[in-house]
Image (tube, rainbow, N blue to C red; front, top):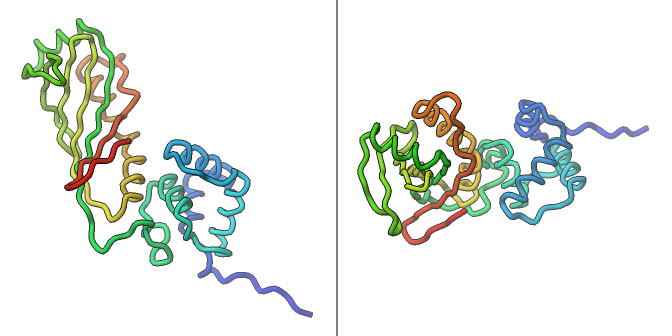
Length: 220
């Protein structure tokens, strides 16, 4: 009588399993998250059912994660780098021998009304300037990770511009970092708005990001 031996523990990807369980997700929930991330990143992804089966194979070690799409989905869902999740089993899809350096620029607007913008111009230390042929004011704001400038426009809009230096090994790593940075930047901006205008003030709901490199520019 023959029996099928279970797969050795070393063949499984315990990191993927731990990351999923830490979030309290089942495989179906993770597949749904993959679907959402795929839409956000404009990826052509498999069906949810196919992804759920793939997640099982990846966690149990029946197959390794080598497909570029799954690399990006896992890294974005768990906010980790490819090395953190897969070690030497998988490299970044666009790995390079050395890092490349970018300047991350995030722009986050919030409408507060013309009167409030005018009031802040009198209570803050501002510099009057022109942006895209529009007169406005600007002031420097302390930021925990980068350099932040707050702009006030006469039609009632405030815009946070956060500049942050960034060094990554691949474009996929940049995408993972950007995806994970949005919630914390929105939370930071909301807390800053409450300090300026009171606890009832809501914060920005959107971020536009642009990356400047030595020879190219990426937006998204």
